[in-house]
Amino acid sequence: MLTPGNVQVWVATEPTSMLKSIDGLVAEVEARFSEDAARGHIFVFVNRQKTAMKLLYWSRGGFVVTYKRLETERKNEPLSPSSSHLPVPSVNPSARPVGARLP
Image (tube, rainbow, N blue to C red; front, side, top):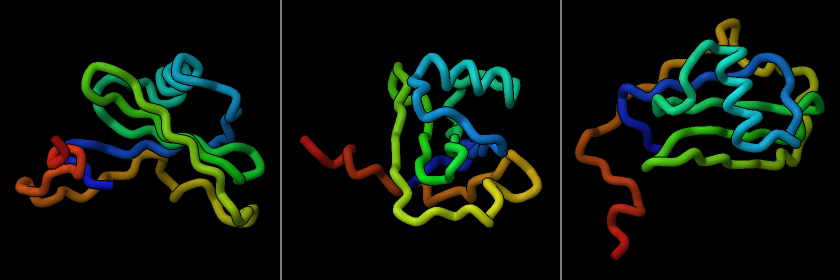
């Protein structure tokens, strides 16, 4: 995923119910990270079994939720490093998202 240099990735270190949709995940962002979910950062949530994850982010005037089913359980791995806040390296400013090239 290409992200601008000022976008941060936040990983919830406690499991989250995958039944939550946008409003529930926005409430999780505010409660767990004390962040405004509409600031453009990416928030990652994983279920208790570590078999699914959701990403929440703000894009072009609305929230986007991406769901991924994880084929292999990773029960022995932590949800994230010691910090729940992971910086994202900056990318080439001339890089354009694929959608920008579509008519």
